[in-house]
Length: 283
Ligand code: SF4
Image (cartoon, rainbow, N blue to C red; front, side):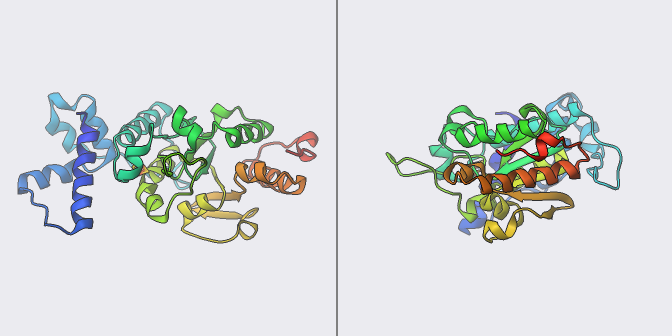
């Protein structure tokens, strides 16, 4: 078993024992000291790499500063971000914190795109297509999202796309369609999204739909009240707009135009030039 999975298994068992309140977990002083030393993701990566030959030196190393925000002009190099994302992905792949989802999923759906992306799109959860292919937003709604991204002037690979939940919410056998994630499922999976955002450090986050907003901000409100204005997620500007699936259900040109106007606000925020053609665009 790889180190991250082993650590994840230990953490999951501890959490389950806490939730079930069955018995107090016991660990020796030596084990506790060792766990404390490896609690940062940076140290875990070091251990996965060259640490096994000289663990003490690496365990003693200081983790790098994670303050890549406005106060710091030094962003981590892309290769470092790629490695960090890969380490989180490995833990997500092995995650069984939601036993029902872990047993019903085909695979986890981590996220896709440029680790250096300026824009990060966040949806709610994988659907059937995403569960099958292992990539977020690949079904009909995903195709519409790709069209929106291209109309903004970006190739899909240039942005980052993820969901609040990394597993498809289970549905009764034989039934079609998707169900929204429960608040508990979102709360359980949210730390992975937080790690992704922390690593990528996008300039703007776009929340797609009310469920994504609830997952990110813990806020529940009608989308007509939420969309089209700037919010903030831990200091990163957050634009809230409709989920592409809503536009597929509601083909009204005025609703599509609202999404496009939200995306123009994103382009303005990023100081990207907006052509006349883009200004007059309708999805
Ligand atoms: S939804 Fe998230 S927390 Fe739950 S099992 Fe999947 S990866 Fe783990």
